[in-house]
Every structure is written in structure tokens, then in C-alpha cells.
Image 1: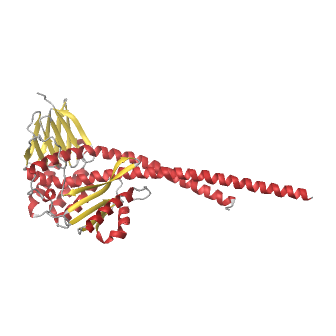
Image 2: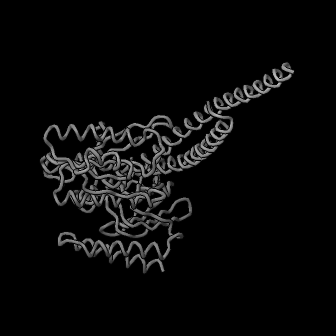
Image 3: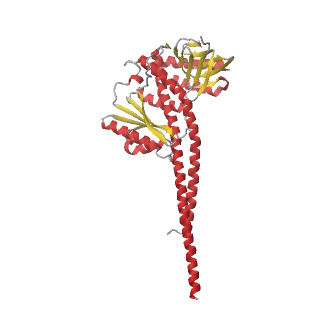
Length: 131
Length: 289
């Protein structure tokens, strides 16, 4: 049994990471999860949060603003709407995201008010983590 | 016959034109490289996205899926999205897109459909205005955008999706140029709503666990799919525009060079003619004495 998985992180604008990882932590819409080798095939949407990949003794962290992830037994592909390495996250970036989320919440209809409220809350939590 | 001074002026002016076209060609070449890189880097995302969507669409199939996938059940009103450049001097780049779009629009109108047009980039708007000006519903201005980002695509997608939700149209098609090489850009039409995904024929799709439910994922991803396709189209278009401009400016530079050669020969001939004339005058003057 292989004990590493192929981890890819892509955003529409570029490919941010492609590496062998032992475990990948993903901020799933319904809770964080850690994917390791031979994980059950899964597709999940993401909430704003931190993707953490550990492999070969190093850990890489990326902040994603949402998107989705595809997990299979040997691969983890994260397709993020926006993604930045954690070290490069700026106040401005978070502020931008927050404004977008709040704007979406302001014009939300009854159907998706819960979802947009959650997005705003998730971002607040993320911002707190970043400090 | 033009005087020597006229010829000299013309040579000078063609020379400065050549300098400009040469500079534009080099700028386009540099921009082309950047545009191609951007398109290349966006490819993994698009490919994966489409693969996942194809799987989802296939398993969620059937008519009760989300409206973006199954359509409104009618194809009466069409939205044509014409993506062109903001600047000219790029050969047939804009005309080929406009021609393809016009053919489609005419076909739809002839078969009694309603057509609405959304333009991205002002060159296409200018060319379409005369024939189909009253069909315009919206224009997206990209002249302020230096480098196309995903956010731009999302804005365009949002514009389209809001109109779809409001029931303003049933089918949306985008027109843009696919970049094949510097000398060849192919006008392409892609139907984005209702979404069509190419399913790979291997049949043995992996069965995924979905979190949250399949439908919820699909409803969240479909609008993103529209943005992704528009983003891919914008990038292709960007690369095509620079490619087209580069070859157009290369041609222009070459033509200017030829023109300079021709004018120089004419200039030298008339200069010699003037000298000969003067000599004849002196000689015949001397003989008369």
C-alpha cells in the first residue's frame, strides 16, 4: 500500500502546488477532514479556510476562499476559487473576501441566506486564525 | 511626376510607419508569450473541473436536474455573447468572430427565434451595431483591464447568470477565437447554458461520496462552470488577439519595407534624370557658343 498521495492545488489562474503528500487537511463545507492514502472517493465543496499538506517532512499551507476538492484513493485535487500560500496572505486579501461575502449576504434571497451567512462567519473565523 | 522633395518626404513617412509597426509587433510578441503562459496555467483547472462536472452531470442526469444543466425546456430566446478585443490593428481577428456570430444570429432570426446580444470588447460591438444594434442588451467594457483575471470572468458570468435566473433567455452561446498558432486563430462557438459536458467514454466512472449532497454540489458548481468557461474563452481570446496582431504587424512591417525600396528606386531614378537634364543643358549651352 502506497503511503503517499498525489496532492494538487489549482486555482483558475495557476497551479499552486503539485506534490507527494502523506496527508492533506481540507476545510470541507461540513467540517475539516484529513485525507490520507486509500481514502474513499469523495467530492466535497470547500468553505473559506486553510488547506494543509504534509509530505516529505515539510508542511505547506494555503488559504483558499472556496471551491471544491476531489479525493480518490491515490490523489487529492483541490480546485480553489482563489488560493494563496499562507505566508503571502495579506490583510487586504482577507478584507476583500470579507467584503465580497458580505455583499453576497446583503443581496441574498431567502433560499441561500443561511449559506451566505455561513460564508461570512467562516471568513471571520479564518481571519481570526490568521492573526 | 512627384518632385524629389515629395519623394523624400514620402520615404521618411513610410520609414516612421515601419518603425511603429515594428514596435507594435514586438510588443505583441511579448504580450503573446504572457497570454499563452496564462492560458497554459489555467488549463489544469479547466480540465479537472470539466472532468468532475462530466462525472456529476452524468450521474445526476435526467430532466429534474438544475435549470443550468437541463435548460428551461424551450429554445426560443438565445443570448449570443460576442467576445472581441478592445483595440484594433490586429488583422482579421475581430472580423472573423463577428462573421461567425452574424451567421449564427441570422440563422436564428430566420428560424423565428428571439436573439439578444451581449458584447465583451468594443470592437465587436462597433461591427455589430449597424445590423443588429437593437438586439444589444448589455456591454462589458474590458478596456480598463490590463491583465485578464478570474474575477473578470466571474463578473461576466454573473451578468449572464442573473439574466438567466430572471428568465431573459433560454440558451446562451459564446463566440471567441481559439488560439492555434500565430498565423491561425479559429472562431469558436460554445454553448454555455444549458451546460454541456463531454463525457469520457470509459464508462467505469468512480463512485464518489458527495458532501454535501450531489444536488447541492451541482447547484454550487454549475455557475462556477459558466465562469470557468468564460475565463478559458477570455484567455484564448487574449492569446489569439496578440497572435493576430503580431502577424498583422509583421505583414505591415514587410509591406512598408517593400514600399521604401520602391520609393528609393524611384527617388534615385528621378535624381539621375535631373542630373542628366542639367548636363544636357550645360553641354548644349557650350555648343551654342
